[in-house]
Image 1: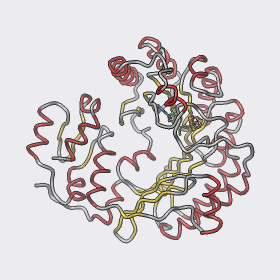
Image 2: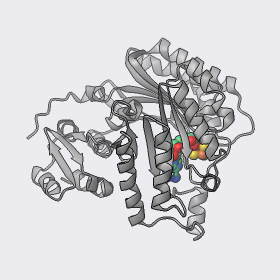
Image 3: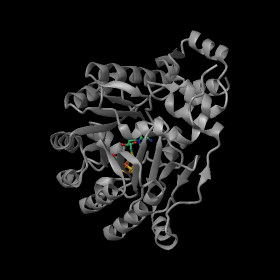
Image 4: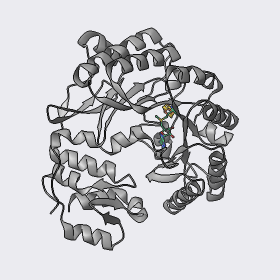
Length: 393
Ligand SMILES: C[S@@+](CC[C@H](N)C(=O)[O-])C[C@H]1O[C@@H](n2cnc3c(N)ncnc32)[C@H](O)[C@@H]1O
Ligand code: SF4
């Protein structure tokens, strides 16, 4: 039996506190993407700035004294934000919350030359980490992915980001149409040779409601790799990143030791986070209750709600302890460090069945070590199944 030492009302402190800001606009909609991103002819930057500031003021009335580990500008394409908007937001953030000594302030950027030209201004505003959406390093694939930049633009933006920011990450999508193992290896080696300290490598997923899903359903998305090739690509990815000193600390994320994304760690370790902006999700523990928050998804409706109702959020819902346990299991098993059995048991109100866990361990899917439970590499390949098995233990 595990010693249940956690006070549930304070559990979020194990993960810390972060702020997510969602910017909902992009220059064009990529055919694979189901994020809350929209294309519009004109953006009223002043009105957006005011709406964000108003939301920050509201959020601060509930969480004002907390210490903030991370601010993340995600999207959409936040590199379409006016640097003055980013500056005003960060200024207001530092008025409302205390920041850790070394806060992580990330902005997601697309590597077109116009956006790269704003990097210095973002840095000046206080951004210290850029997450660059490279996606691919060959022009034909970039076109197929509907991207607005070339491979050369991508590398130039990466070099510029590395020269300006303390920390740089980039995103690539693999398991693309007609991609083979050798060319993926070459592409990844090339990116790693430019020295990012963090890299997110996602297998192309066909998301419902996207242009790719429509093509796929019509049998017109040719050349996608089969499961075996995708698994080989995943193994090669892990191997090449390790050679470059970037260790996989989550299913799709690799970092030099110490350069892990602190923001995502707050999510995966079940900390509290404010979600501000259209469609943004949050988790907030208030008066001992853990609440799920979600903001209105449509950019126009969100701004109208902020103006008229004084909040962009839809009604909040309390998360039952057993649902928190399920969420913690799902999030933490993505991490190499895994999950604390004491925390999980406290949420669940009981310890999971030790004999069932021992069986999963014997079969090589998990490792238990000093009160922590981790998925092995073969467990990670079957993660959804594994999560189900543990939740039933
Ligand atoms: C919020 S999105 C994009 C940020 C930025 N607008 C960009 O496009 O570079 C974050 C990342 O998710 C990944 N992504 C989005 N849709 C995906 C999909 N269907 N399959 C795999 N990765 C995807 C991309 O690598 C993307 O950079
Ligand atoms: S991948 Fe990025 S740029 Fe493309 S539509 Fe999605 S959020 Fe916008």
